[in-house]
Image (tube, rainbow, N blue to C red; front, side, top):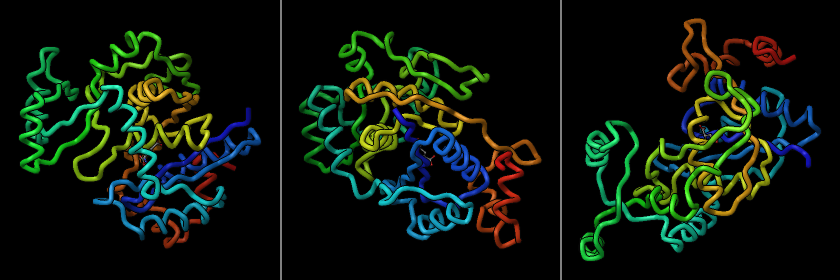
Length: 282
Ligand code: GLU
């Protein structure tokens, strides 16, 4: 089986050094294994994504010297695929409508019996209450019911994934997935109709991704993505989370560091060769 990996940026800002490191890491892995490198544009959040940032992604990656297969998968063009996955989960009683506001969710998570934390666990409203809210036109999100998921799978004990990169504390090997940490995640947002985890899991499967190579900041996301793969009967890729690049001040690069975008570096005369060398790619 040949290695298929992807770089999956969201066009919500210009790419920075951290993105370059991630894309180069995935690209090198594909080349080294005689495999495939795919680019995926994760643009489902139309409230934050902008066409000029997508154009910027193509420009910056080409400038870095990367090439990728075309056509590029743009998530906004495949909403029906995510809707179908959601329908599968709904059909199996694994998703429920959640009308709660952000504030209510935060309050409920803070007073949860297992102690305060970000993990929200909820339940559907009664059919009458739900009908009333629907009739009133109240917006709702679809959430995954962890309780129903746990019942459907007979527990989460068999949910594992292989970490070949650096998990927390540099650990690697077979990892137990702990979807409980995330609570009842949102599958479809009130505003944009689908949410990140569901779209990623569907796309990784549809695109035949064998190795997910991405930053350690997404390690925690793997727990719930592994659960969704199990519930949807999708294959589980191997994961290689890589360390996050930090600046001279020890902080990781982020979209807030405008001076460190690849476009700015390019304008300042930095060459792709310099950047690659500095990041350990020759
Ligand atoms: N679109 C996500 C981001 O830009 C990455 C998703 C992934 O690699 O799984 O953070």
